[in-house]
Image 1: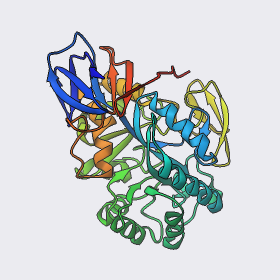
Image 2: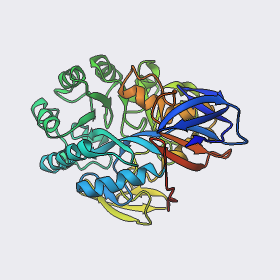
Image 3: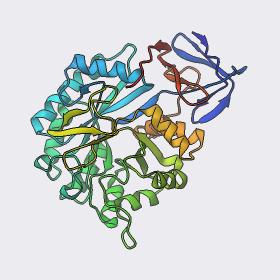
Length: 371
């Protein structure tokens, strides 16, 4: 493909001035004489995707899942984790079986499906959010083992205060599953115990969790206070107030992992759908149930990146929050994106941080405007 014509690129978590070249699907050289404008950044990595382009991963066929992979790639997503919220055990088992098939045959000009994030059902009824109380239960290692045998479970969210939660965290972490704390009413002590057991992140901080008060920092406060915990944040400026988001980005910018928690209608003109057995309506950009409770979002990763910059986050920290940080959350040994010799999964942005082009393994994919 040759040179991209950009003024700089974000390589291994740092900004490198100069152009970048791509040969045979891999990054060839960096720091070449600069182009006139724009930057190359690593393809986005989204750890919480419920579906996209009209496809719901809970009910999708393998063919529909592949369509969503292609649609995600066109918005700059290089890799993602599919999110399955609390549901009937047989429904989850069926979705995991399809996910196993998709994981085995994926390829082409599509976003890479890394695995499944089980967001539930081991959640607190007091902080269930959009999750139906009918599906919630205490952690059961045997049930989780059944699901892990059914499909590629990479990550899970649970409430650490539930009976059986700590042994499950220890067991999953020992087997390489990333554990996130969320949808939890934990006290500070219970949250700390969950992190000490091996959990390394929180699911959509401040949403669906015990918050900070004068005499109890709750799960959110404990996560903010610990340098070893990644902070997953939905930055659509609806799930978290702008002022609070600015505080997080200022206080712990290098621990932020931007996620979309995007819903199946993202990228479509639709306004009504069902998620986890609950009817959802899109009202002025807010996806809510009949009681007005927020579900996920319809934000895309490129918009989340622009929101981060608008909230005062540095360019390096904002880019890392969409690519390097989620990779390191999944694999602490990950070296970094866009190094020479690595796959050219990247996004070209103009000086306004709008997408100009997307490369998947060095191949340009058609950009489709998100409605």
